[in-house]
Amino acid sequence: MTDASSSSAPALAIAGEFNIFTAAPLKARLLDAIAQAETAEIEVDLSNVTEIDTAGLQLMVMAKREAASRGKSLHFASHSGSVLDLIDLCDLTGFFGDPIVIRNSI
Figure 1 (cartoon, rainbow, N blue to C red):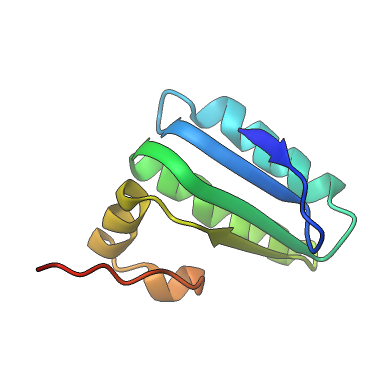
Figure 2: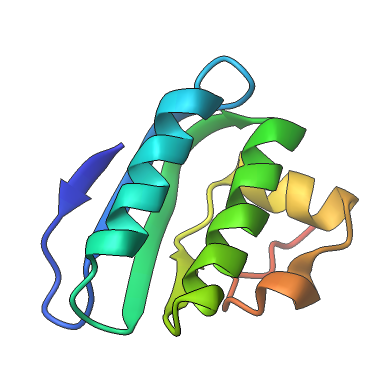
């Protein structure tokens, strides 16, 4: 995960695998970003996530809830195909409430 500058919100970008093998360091980085965010809006860019499993999905849920418990709003953006597939499979689009691009299945 790398930090990226943004004029409206602290932004993080997760790249590569977002799974059980990367969960521990990514959890620490997400929690740190939430704790240190100086604004109430936090954005996490998922455009370069190549693989995600339920451990990654659990981290997304945890981060959303942790931000809310601190009075902040965390949004996921630019979801990769892998992320969209898993969110759709688990029927969690409504939970996250983030704008997503609806893909054409034809």
